[in-house]
Image 1: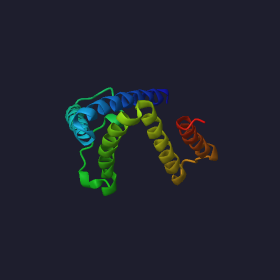
Image 2: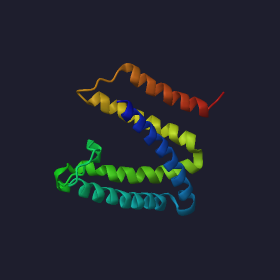
Image 3: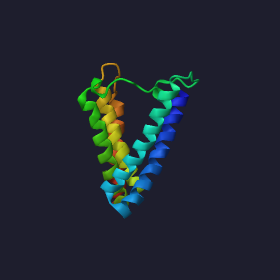
Image 4: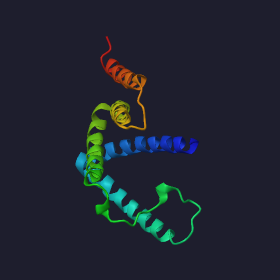
Length: 154
């Protein structure tokens, strides 16, 4: 479990760097062009990774975690709505790149994380296997109030 926590923390650090880089690229190219470049380069990397792990699946690997596995099943086997994640991701990068250059990296990160926490609580409440507590809902509310108060100091 500690490895998953560290992996998530490292992912958060990478997202912070990615936001800053995309914000800078957005200043030069515009938010949608920056998002396009971000996803095109990401697609190239993922293509390389899928090819490598597809070939490597023939050869025994010591790293056999599920997130390294490459599925050979057809794209039509997943529900259609699951592919909206790509659309949402592309819009997220474009919007984030646009907003970051106007309100700064910290405020952008705080608002994005608040939105993610709200979504997380909603998903936890809707899941049968995970129970969301009132403390979680109140915690998200307090974070949002804190961000608002930091913007509107009396």
